[in-house]
Image 1 (cartoon, rainbow, N blue to C red):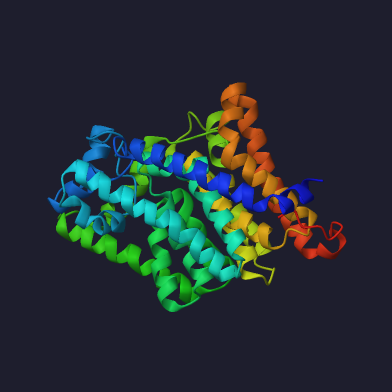
Image 2: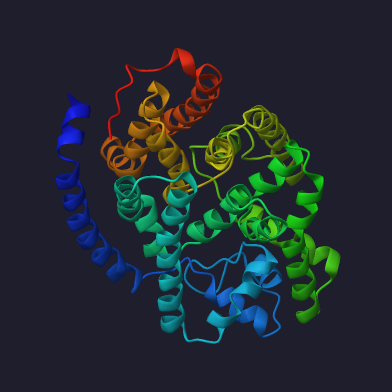
Length: 378
């Protein structure tokens, strides 16, 4: 019944989505023009003035401007040089435009890679632009779209240049780490070294222009991130910190991080046993949502899984994927707000994400047993 409804009314649904997308986009732009507080403009300005913002913020215990705490890798503040030349309001506007470009480019390159029909491509683009994680990224001036784009590159392009630029995703430690970890899990040691080049170049430029001690400066971004103590309650790292490590030393926390990396490494080995590159990517880039702290805007990382599921929606598991991602994109925040019971809701969300990966790995291996009446829902 649901399948027939979608098939018979797909153009009407598309026109309705376009209408709501325009309204949503106008609302998001109006917010982004007056907010954008997470855009790391001020730390970049400090760096280009020769000031080591990591050292400054570690000593102060916080950043100087809005919520720009500068806990990103050295290379990011170098990349932001053109924005540092502008006043805050103009820089915020230009970063909003940059984020908008990423919001359109990501669904376009995925659709072309998967060779999706024009209808499915348009539908997915509208979903991506209107979903809450994307709107939140544009509103707060976050770096999630930037990081996601470069996380996807080594899978979509598969070249030395793509592997090099994938290192730009390392600017956000809680997400980009999964790319270099995946290179290691897949025994692509040469690609791993290529991808680390931007990070190392950024480090050399940073400590040179700020006259900082190279060794100390190398670890300062991580020190600043840990000092901030950023935890949520929908990932393993945060849950362990909240319930077991709140009073523990920094050394113990480093050991826990290593253990989480090890578990993630094993999961990546399992994922890489599959041959479908895009399927592997769609599972690999959602691992950070399970293992390390993230906010609602980071759920854009579920988008490739949605696209893959649209392409192969004759399988039961992909129907489950579609409904699950749509729930996260549009209803997760609403339900969480209504329940107002994070102690239970967030661990359930973590469990559901873990279950999605397990079900997909099992279903891919046994997909012939999960064919669902050969009925497409879109």
